[in-house]
Length: 261
Image (tube, rainbow, N blue to C red; front, side, top):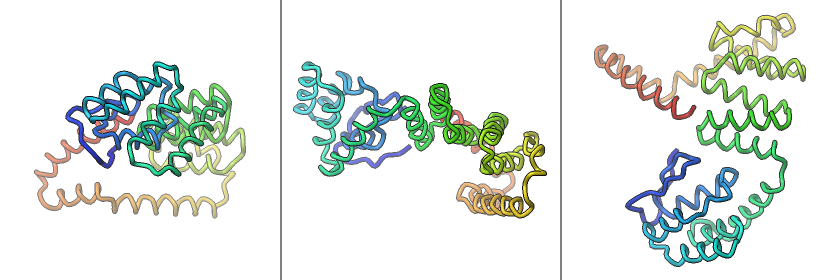
């Protein structure tokens, strides 16, 4: 995940554990707070953060104000709003919208909060954490939509059997066609996972033709992607170089996969 670097760049970043992200400026800090309020813990603003603001960003007044608020027992909301206002990255109207969303998050049920947490981690590419959040949401309250998200997260990390089990469960519960389509696509990706076979007689030929067209269209788009084109270009240029580059690319993609899980 990359952020636009604005303002003064710190010599040493602030490491934000929940996102596994180094923040290099106060503006980047504001960006994280504004866009990902659902993952901000109640103890996010602490002495570690205020020391970083003071020593790395020259925000001594802001750091002192935050420490004063913490000493007075102010809640997290006031601390976050102080950072957003001082960061000069968002307008007052945007900060007001953030305040409204932050208060809404505090009032929703736990299962809905965990569902939103899963959505946030999924957008960030942290699929392992998204799976954990969706599973916790489902342990709190069963919900077919959350199950579909969980199945999608499993597909993303190529755990096709787990995804298939979830989609089949949703289909049995709801008789909805969407999980069947997902099962059809999974069988395309991994023929060993053939759960769809037991339901093929229930699917109209026109629907199957439409699913097949959707799959072919997506596959065609993937083949046009920059990543695939780079690999093909290397292959066309030099077979020996292709083998060397392929090893490096595989290592890189494996690392990306492990980071996401």
